[in-house]
Length: 216
Image (cartoon, rainbow, N blue to C red; front, side, top):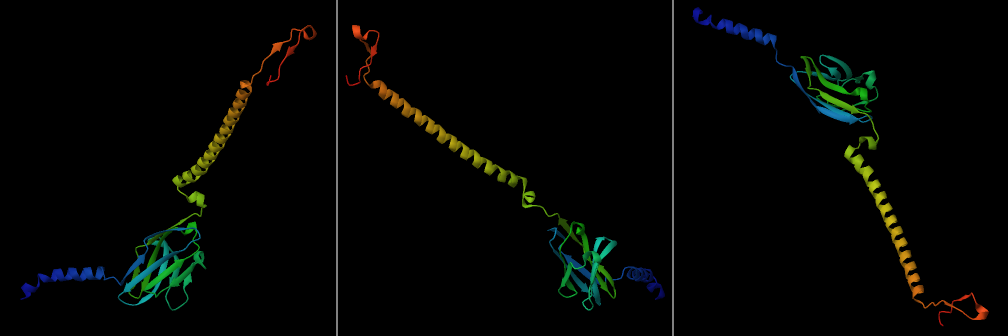
């Protein structure tokens, strides 16, 4: 019987070593959204959802790259939250500790980065996948517009001005042509009247030219 049990001993030893080296996770952490773009001065919400096998002590929000991160805030649901001086007065909390929504307000360009939810448990720690926050500079509406929109906004007034100019030029040309037509009609009417020029050959009126009245 001893000979039949001996072959199973190495396998049992391996399983015990693996169990000691890789203990089951103390809990799972999810966070959302994964990515967000917010204008300067706006706000963003990061939700940390935690499922623990033991006791959840609190939730950290950290900024940076793992494993080197900087603390943003810590919330435990019992005592007052601690907030890093960079975010003082700009952080709000809502919801229970295991489904905590952290709102960061009045965002600045230097707030751009990746934020991680870290669950603190009696049995250990858990990390979320991270939320990438991009804070854009505040620009004027004209600067934010697409190039095609800017071109359309510029083209329409120019086209309208050119159209008005063409209408004015067309009216002016029509008036000039009309005046010429009226003048030509007047000249043609004057020429149609009988106008006879003759020379008086009498001695008393030598070297004079008489223009009789049109009714003569």
